[in-house]
Length: 417
Ligand code: NIG
Ligand code: FE
Image (tube, rainbow, N blue to C red; front, side, top):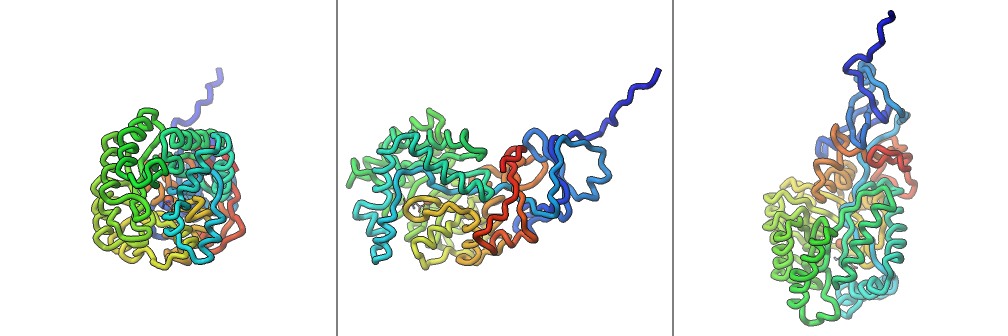
């Protein structure tokens, strides 16, 4: 009787194998993109299960259901936009015109425009309308390689509309192959019902909205706008304390228009990140460093508000605070839904290196969202969220703008673009 052929025990059976690709793993911090030239990687059950060079692959006993030939192109981790406000009603093109005629962002906000005008439009929009508009924006990010996005509430400023926004954030994840991290930003502005009573509104956020949102499991994190047109340091502290009580991680909009020492305060509450930071001082940076926080820089808002105060890049580097880059996509300060433009602006406006910029939308953006163990790198055990680019060197991702070099996008092991 013929002996039954058995497979060698160490044969690898993969679902998908990428071959002939240069791989910017982003696994080695900011140095040389962690590149594997002429590499290959295997994917099974949504995870990266093997990674190496083509030479290393040649001596392995494997089979793969699907083989994707990279033909010398570049693979990077799927991009992560770690700070957005893409769910909102209406637009603020009128305020853009007012600013061009000399009004400042603060003046418009103090006069009842700004965030509050978007609050009115968001309250009157239906869930379906908000979803359709936000999906359109998320699609634009996704087509540029985004596989994970953070989305904030904060244009409801009452329980009903904040819940509506967070529900839309959950629905977005069902509509598109993008992981959506949801952040409750009830403390974004003082709503009209609480005019001149910020104390009353903060109590509402901490004692009513936050407990309910936590109970419903609608948010992954809590954010506060600590600013002269937002909330004071004391009010911010109250929100951070309440979030800690509900075991929700915190983050903060800080030092955007002035130095309120918000980043320093947030560091005491183990914040994931402090975001904007144009006016951040050295003390704040030290505090962020000691608390292992990420600095999220938002070049779109810097550009759109014609800000001139640069964030303290050199000091952030000196204290080795990881720098993430995000669109801040929102109707007031950054009506921009292009992560590729942010890569370019991070370099042209903030003088980041192209490698730092790419780290800002991959490994460091994952850190800003508390997702360092699963996303932002091409490494074994990590989620198979992978972008394939028709470029000759990774610096091109930041160097050029307008042609979209994305040729394929994999989300959780499935080719979705
Ligand atoms: O991140 N700074 C506060 N929030 C947004 C702007 C919101 C708005 O103007 O609608 C930001 O810039
Ligand atoms: Fe923001």
